[in-house]
Length: 374
Image (cartoon, rainbow, N blue to C red):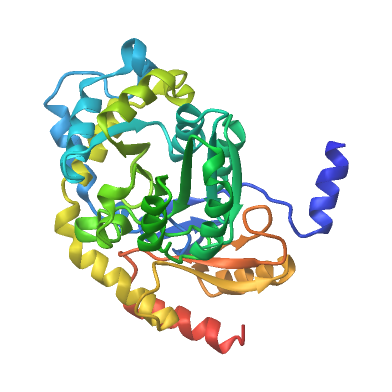
């Protein structure tokens, strides 16, 4: 069965391999050639800055072991760096409670299974991330998916189903990872309030980049306090490791006691936690980087309101592969995105911009793909 499946994937132009790459700030090297990296989630260009030297010098003055926390947080892994980072996150989000986990996947696959029961319902946007879909599958709650960014469809489901359940959760991303479009959070909050629901918002691709000081789309649209659960990763815009949940104190306490992906996971190393705090404290200073990122996005798509994630649609797998190969020949590292990452027939090349990219290189890239007639 394994060999047959692999052969089918090859025939469908859907077979994947792990490329051998050497990142170098805004560039990366592959088989001796340098490419401008248009596929990284390092949205603020943190890895292109020499901040690490000062950070490591700071650590040298403190005599301790930085490289691992060899236990779960509930045993011996809850090092002081967790308290420091969670307090910094709490301050950053206006005093709400923060809980840090090992990755966004652990958060999205763990929160709703911990908080829901068989008497509950989860209504999730059709294009939510795979990690959140796995969270739905692991949950005891019933769940359905509403049409992408379609509050009217969501309301039809709520009108039909709300009375049958104790608690109903609405789940969405704020910036969607494959299309770069933005959820209608105002409308979702209105439905939450009208039908007495709870709202779960994944800000993984907005945190650090969007909103005041990089607080995300919920803060940008003024609905942060109405998000019962807000989550984001530390491994994208701030170039670190881990993820976090923003909630109220009872939910945080409940997750500590019931969230399997927290309870049964080894703690993050202190050095990663400390680096996250180091960059988090600098986010308010990085508004010029956020402005430059918006400028680069406008150069490519001409849309004042589009985000830093830009899909160049191909449709079929083979065409997406050919598009990415053509761009790599010109020195731009982009990858084809295919099923099951995106629905069948919607293969694309996804551009992930970052604030370290030079304007002239993005102009050159834009001319390339527009002249290619795609």
